[in-house]
Image (cartoon, rainbow, N blue to C red; front, top):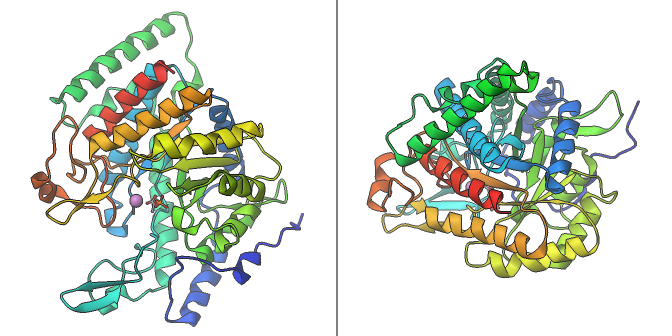
Length: 445
Ligand code: PEP
Ligand code: CO
């Protein structure tokens, strides 16, 4: 079956934030090779996720999405991947147990390698070079060689994403994600923090509940494995197009670079290339909405990206800032609800709350993050709509990138373990703290 859809109309539209590849031939060679590669995910898996998102949009599940701001090739060690997966599984257990809701687990992982930048150039000590745009495009070292965009990096994105996904699938299908391992997921993390104790207590309660269930003879398969989905900002359109395939079952196109892809705040122009490309693929998709979003923009995005109002198709990821969400979000949610359209609303409490610490590090305050999440729940509670999920930048490691939280990380502490090449991430403890707080909000919803 061939698709009637033209997947290349975006090429004649303005595409924001695309790299300036200096060598057009090298780009062609890389793209030709990517087009021959097997899919990283299957269309049927994307459809399963879409079905689950539809449930979350109806208030019957909660969407948990998290991972690095920018993955880096050198960071994809087994330990780092395992710690991230464990952190997300722990957060999911806290949310699921606390709120009695199924949790959809989505990694900002296995493909999150390209970054939009406010400036094309960066100047250090009088030297100006191209800005770092993520490992998909150039290197982080401040040298002309590293900063020159190299399309062969796109092949490395594919290969590294495949390796990451392979390990994630092994972890989540091979018994490691079994709910009876809920204690194991805390191993290797510091346990003497109060959030660690709280987690152990919850894990004991889950253990008792599972033991009780076993006495009834129930041993459901669902305990053994979990569905874990991949996602990234689909920024570099040449890469995403090269990984778009026609599903043999349905004849429809899917971007098989990830289960879920989203459009960033800087690339969501209604007549731009990204919106056009996304309108053609059948994956569940997201769009970031910043503080300047207007109800009319949101409705126009729905008309372009989800003209058939397909359940689970569209997720809006609001990232307004802690002080703006209570004013900016309500008219958007109301406008959508008034038309009877069902989308999934999730909160990204990170990107509206970034500032520069006196030492120069980009950081975020844990309290600002929580203040935005609280605002998100308040808005939805007031309007009778569903606070459907959270989108977080996190890592399973003990980094010091965001200030505050139970460990009371200070501005002075940032230097001790700041590893992100891009935005600051919640560390393992801060991520679990956030999950406990969100679980309470969900319980009272
Ligand atoms: C991001 O998610 O890392 C990002 C750049 O977000 P936004 O598009 O919302 O600024
Ligand atoms: Co970011």
